[in-house]
Image (tube, rainbow, N blue to C red; front, side, top):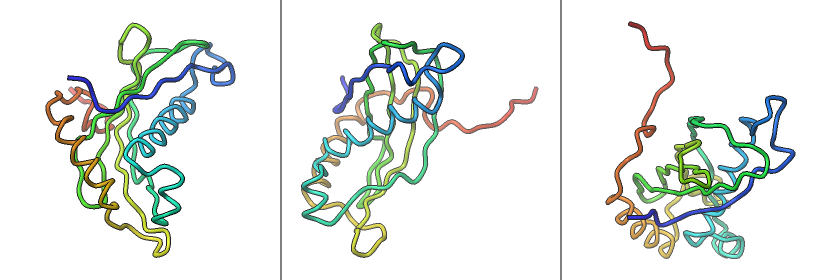
Length: 156
């Protein structure tokens, strides 16, 4: 089963560093652009954010770099919702190269924010319904092995 969200991009010239491959900060940029597209996809596009005076903030992220990407390389970012509640989304994004190989992953926690109050608030009903539908579909997909990882030096 395919994830219910995907985003496509290309590694730009200015994203390549002195090592000849995509710089780590640019993976963040690509994932940020994919997250913005995800937010639009769930029904919180620019117009809707204005209507509800509502937005989404990123609370936490974790990136794994798995393979190098080079200038001009096309990629697809696929999203999988791991969990959702009234105002939070636990989202996993996987970047794949043109061969469908995983090149990087990003796990993140997002929170819906009432801009008038400046704090967390429940998603608008239409958004909540879309998220529930997507989460139920995505629950049928296996979790990638990179999900839930922590940073640390493994000692033997």
